[in-house]
Structures are given as C-alpha cells and as structure tokens.
Image (tube, rainbow, N blue to C red; front, side, top):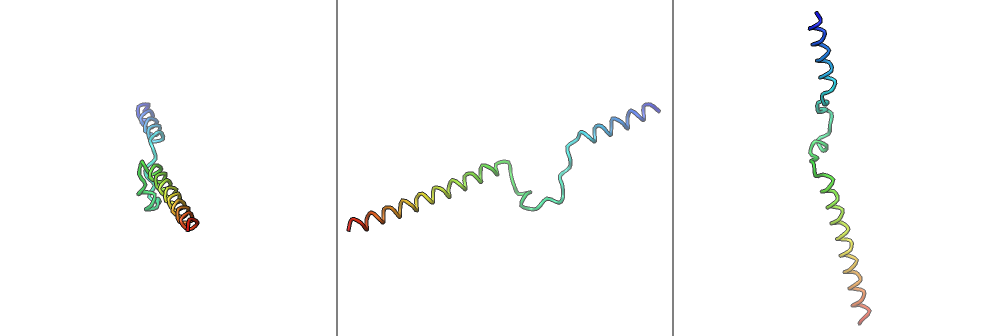
Length: 69
C-alpha cells in the first residue's frame, strides 16, 4: 500500500514540476514568432531610422541646391 501511495505522490510531484504544454489558444501570429524575433524587430526599426535620415539628407541637399541658384 505504501508503494502505491509513494508512486502516486511521485507522479503528482513530477507532473506538477513539468513545464506546461503549449496552449492551443495562441494566435497564429504568436506561433510564427521565433527566437530572434526581438532582433528582427530591432533591425526593422533601424532600417526605418536609416530611411528617415536618408530622406532628410535628400531634402537638405535639394534645399541647398535651390539656395545656390
């Protein structure tokens, strides 16, 4: 009898300590995320900033050309 109780207790402890199974209510977008998702988002933001800076430089260059005339 003690062996059965010990076995059940061990099973409960092991089940309680195990990681939870993947939740099936996750959205498809969340499942598509990967390990490097943060880095990819950071790179996308950096590309946006780079494009903003390039656009500003083009605008400054155009303004300087217009003032030279």
